[in-house]
Length: 377
Ligand code: UD1
Ligand code: UDP
Image 1: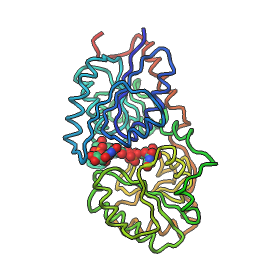
Image 2: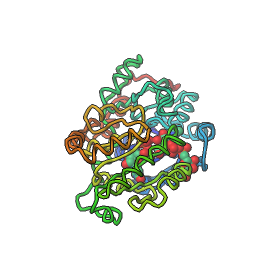
Image 3: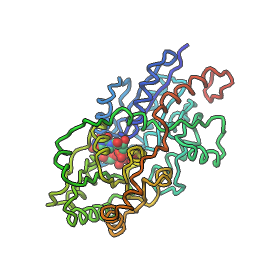
C-alpha cells in the first residue's frame, strides 16, 4: 500500500527547499506525493515552481497585498482544512518557520494527522526575533512527530526542549541540495556585466521586524557605502512587499551605483551570490547558502538562528543601526585581512543529500511497525 505524503508550502524560501524533497519523494514508488501550495506568496512562489517544474494538486491562493499575520494565519487555517480532510495523508510535511508552516501544522494537529518538520530545531530563543518566525517554529515543534534537523546544533535545541531523540534526524539542509545544481562557472547576465568592473554588493531585505525605521537605517548605511566607494556597485533584487519597495525607493533615489531589480529566479540569484564580493541581508536562507560559496555576509539583524555560519566565520551579525552596518561594511572593503577572515568556504549544512536522507528516513519510519502515530488507524 502506498503511503500518502502531503507536502505543504507557500513562500519562496520554503519552495526552494521543499521542491528538491518533492522531486525525491516522487522518484520513489512507495509514496503518493501530493503538493499543496498555500499561496502565501504569489509571484515569488510561482518563480520557484517554474524552475523545478513540479506539478501541484492544490493551490489555495491566499495572498493579498499588505496582508497581516491575522489574514495569513486565518485564511490558511480555513483553506487547508478541506484539503487535509479530502486527502487524509499519512504524513504532512511542512518547512521552517513561516505562517504557512504554523497554520498547516496547527490544522494537521486539529485533525490528528502526523506532521514531519523539515528544517526543525532552529532557535534564537527570543520570541520576538525574528518575528513571528521564532514563535512559529517553536510551536510547530510541539505538534511534530518527525523532526528533520539540518545540523547537530538544531538537534541539540530539540533535545534540550525534551523532544524524543528517536524522532530527531540530522539530515543537512535541503537548501544545499538546490545550490549544488544551480551555480555555473560560465553563467552570464547583463546585470553582472554592468557590475563587472566593481566590487559587487548583493542586497536582500524583508524581515517584518525590520520594516520601518530599521530598514531606513539599513538602506542609509548602504547608500553611504556606495556614495563613498567608487569601486563598488550594488544589486538589490527587491522583495515584492510594497512597504520594502517604498523605503528603498526613498533611500536610494538618484543613486546610480545600485540596481534595484525584481526578485531573481533562484538559479540567477545563486549565480549572483557566487559573483558577489559581499552580501548584506536579513534573510535566513541566504545565511545557509553564502557559507558554501565563501561569501562574507553582514546579517542585518540582532539575532540569528543560524550560528553555524557565524562560528564558521562567514557570517557577522551587524544589527540594524546605520553606523554599525556602515562601519562593518567599510572594514570589509578596506581591511584585506578582515575580508579574508570571512571569505572562507565552509559548509555546516550538509553535503547536498538532505532530501534523499529525509525520504529514506520516512521510508524506514513507515516500514517500522512500531512507529508512533496520532492518526486513528
Ligand atoms: C514571509 C514569511 C517569512 C519569510 C519570507 C520569505 C511569515 C510571517 N513570513 O514574509 O518568514 O522569511 O516570507 O520571503 O510567514 N508579496 C507579493 N508577491 C509575492 C510575495 C509577497 O506581492 O510573491 C507582497 C504582498 O503585498 C504581501 C507582502 O509581500 O502582502 C508580504 O508577504 P508575507 O508573506 O506576508 O511576508 P514576507 O515578508 O514575505
Ligand atoms: N532568492 C531568490 N531570488 C532573489 C532573492 C533570494 O531566489 O531575488 C532565494 C535565496 O537564494 C534563498 C531564498 O530565496 O534561497 C531566501 O528567501 P527569502 O530571503 O525570501 O526568505 P528567508 O530565507 O529569509 O525566509
